[in-house]
Image 1 (cartoon, rainbow, N blue to C red):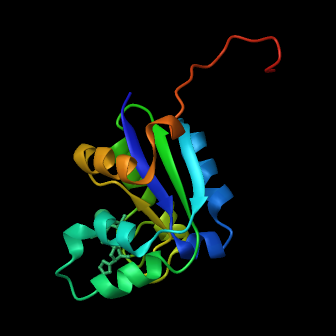
Image 2: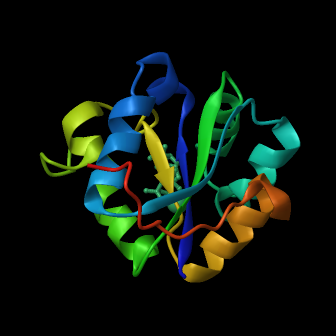
Length: 148
Ligand code: RTP
Ligand code: MG
């Protein structure tokens, strides 16, 4: 099953949006297969955002993402990489459509609430950066007499 890496950034955690964001992914129909609250080290931040290391905003981006706890997640489901990006919305919240996470909750580009992997390759790379193999759980829905 396809998987992607999603992270509530420090601003999203500060604003108590972990529940709201997790709810949107669950209700969309995706399955949560890994999650943890953590503080990103400087080294991990630089590796994660390596593609932006020549950009003028790189230093600020690394400083921000390491400034407080993030909520790192792995979500699974068909087309989860691309569909997560559309649930998240455009990078700049001022351009993100209402109904998307950044469109509904974000204001400025450097505090845009959430990260989502932008391709299958990025997803695999980022999941391995943030999670150990045994922190990812795979499970099937059970037939039961206790879900009504
Ligand atoms: P992310 O990687 O965080 O999910 O965001 P993204 O794919 O939508 O955007 P990306 O181009 O990868 O940019 C990474 C993060 O850098 C910050 N940024 N600041 N000041 C600026 O012009 C600027 N441009 C990008 C944003 O916080 C963006 O999420
Ligand atoms: Mg990106």
